[in-house]
Length: 330
Ligand SMILES: [Zn+2]
Ligand SMILES: [Zn+2]
Image 1 (tube, protein in one colour):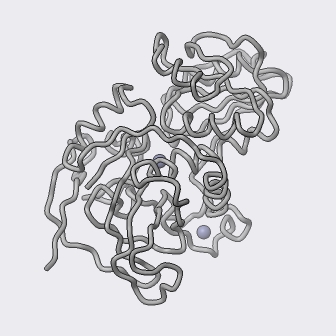
Image 2: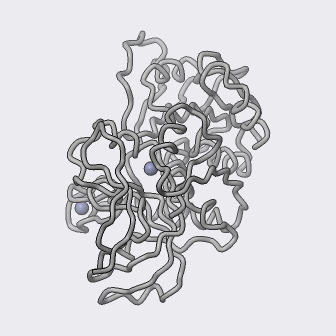
């Protein structure tokens, strides 16, 4: 039996363990990928902490996979051996439930998710269903391409929910915000970046990427915002962002998990302000975002870690010590 190294979550609350595992075989519509890079997403931390229910266990996490095809299962015509493929969070949808039938496969009742309910990319090899994978624009090296696959895609879905907002606040300037800020600036929006109080380094980083203003998440922006996207999993940011909004503005909660939102007075929601959340992605989001990434050279900042050092990488991300995105290299 051929084996590979993988970082495995055996139980929420525990560290990942380095294990020797069988290399999976691609089934119908699947390819076997040799993983070149896999990003670490905030969602992974929620899985490790038991904040998302019923993960597959034991689990190989990771849903920002960049790999090359080494084997093809039956029925695969889309990719050839050696092709570079990106694998996102959405790993399977049923195509028949009412959400799938109405163009909302991100809400599919029978969806499966990479690195959560199916094994992901914290490993030397991974299998992926080609119907949910994407080709990656050639201009991005492997490690730099990894964060496009979730921080980029789901960040883009959140960004789309701001409609034609001119002034957009980004709360939490991590992997997703640093990519979406560039797309927003490129499309003529003004970006206001909010970081943990006192994080001057991330504020300077945001300004360098084109933000009009950067400051503490406890501060108000110099002008009221048309929309705010909250990437940090911090419930107190919801009333903070509402207070920063202009009339008719929208707060988009982009994370899969958030600490409790404190009570707030109705007058900060009044005047047609809205709060919405973003769940998962559709394949259309992925295709649209990859088309933008093809046209616009998005600067992706990554800190690389060897696969075996996944626990150290997770600790650094937790502590806010990563500028941009953390990426594992097998
Ligand atoms: Zn993610
Ligand atoms: Zn469905």
